[in-house]
Picture 1 (cartoon, helix red, strand yellow):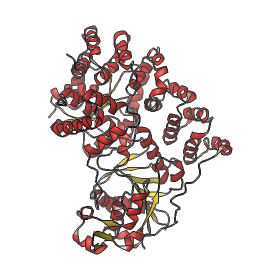
Picture 2 (picture 1 turned 120 degrees about the vertical axis):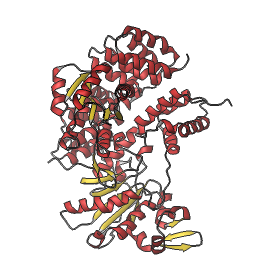
Picture 3 (picture 1 turned 90 degrees about the vertical axis):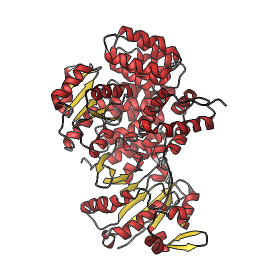
Picture 4 (picture 1 turned 135 degrees about the vertical axis):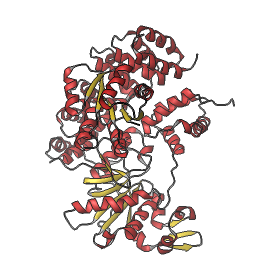
Length: 280
Length: 207
Length: 122
């Protein structure tokens, strides 16, 4: 096969398009990184050259290729304490804000979607136990959902590889996990702390009962949706939140590409999004 | 205090969406005092056969941005003739955010836009023509490039041409080279056109 | 060095404004709509905003109103628009713009207005 060439003009054209769609902006110094992945996808899709590939990317109704490309342009792995600064933000800024406005003694409600194999909701539970004094005063309900029943079963089982737990401080690994022959089994207490449920964010039927959350984690999911699905998902999350409730997105995601429903809120540790207070 | 599970959820069974009998109630809820109720009504109406008429009717009087966003999403999902006519009307609204929201919605409906886009490109209002060019961005239609070329060759309004030049840089082929050179000559004293046409030419290839 | 945020959904327009302002010695950043512009304003301070009217998600008026109401920045903002009518201009001033330019802008016009509002680049 002839060498596939990405010209500077192609790069510029792609850079502008990808930025507009995802909010991810590649500096010219990333040219090599970007070109390499574009060539990889041009080969995989057998589109032969940049021009054909770019047309597929822009117009494919399913948005599948844009999703594939976004996948390799961003590193999407799930492991314990991934993007830890957001958990710091949760305990140091978000929950104090939630508690200060709370008018009742009911539980604080957190929804983590997608649950994937459970690393994120368990990280949240661990973080609250370890780093949030409020856990002694407040009940917390953590619900974590996914569309995929297989990963939900994995999440409930709570058995993890070395790779999943590699960023955990040793102290916490020893405290909350038990080594088994083929990995690390998370403690029964933590497994009891999280309620795993099946939800399709794109289906009103499955999300209708999800209401009154104080915080929603929805990281590294919407960036892979097509425009209309992410609008719908952003609306679903909006209705799942209490007024002034918070949404945390992944570090390479910006609500500016998904929805205009939320206010941007800057805390010391992170930028998050907030459902506005009810006007009446 | 501790972690709690308030209500065990049945994780397999979905709550039913509304049925035909409930649509009348939803129409009333679309005018409820509470924005929460109006938002849910707009979403639930999406499967109702006469939803587009109700949603379009509500769109223009709806003061809450969150409800408008949901109505526009519902109209986008429906994409029928009434929805399309309603969206086109929004392009003429005095309300800037409604205009822009409608453009976004229409970009999601390329197949539905193709038959009406020519009319919009010939609209007497230059702002509507600019929006039409913006919508072309999302259209996969064999004639997009020739429509854009015809805009830059014939549209009397500088800003409509400028928007089309911008898009030609992204979707154009070498066939656009000559028209781009011509518009550079026509607007020889407009630095922006010189700049934008150069950018577009550099991206077209085929020199 | 003084830093300017260009808020416009059209890539070529952002490139054009960037070229003019960088050649005059200013540092420039970009945003494609009002929400991204708010996000960037929370990350760092800008000395001036150049804001388009029509943008998806959050338009120019909405952006300026929010910027002013939330007191994120009281620095000058120039609104750029294709619309020449005085009603549009007064709406821009009401939203918190300090100046109004009709698109497409001329390089000298933009440069001198920027310098009038915030002085030399450093």
